[in-house]
Length: 117
Image (cartoon, rainbow, N blue to C red; front, side, top):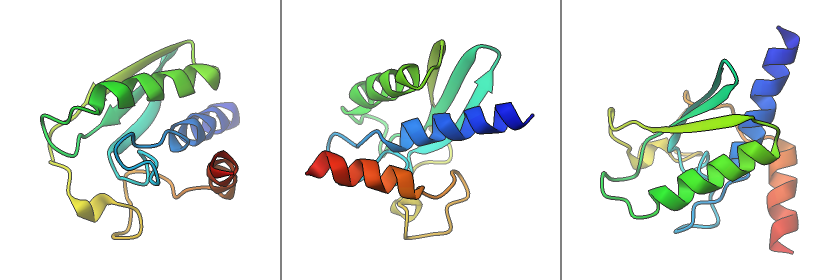
């Protein structure tokens, strides 16, 4: 069980490193669109709620999440688009108690800072 928890956290960390292509100062986790990251067999499944139903950045976000998770060791990745409940700005980190994802780790913040330098 400890291995499964460690793997789940590593996958969350990988997704935390994916920046929103339209607002690149926020990760997709900080933006609040990532609802869940879990393993189903050999597949890492990520549930994402777009900021609106026609969001043109979703394909790029899905590709970036998939690439980050494969780099983190995922054999297979599936990104599900979840439309209900609809996304709200209340889901942006710092604007509500985030019950959908663990808070950003110091390692994630360090990686983000190193990318900016």
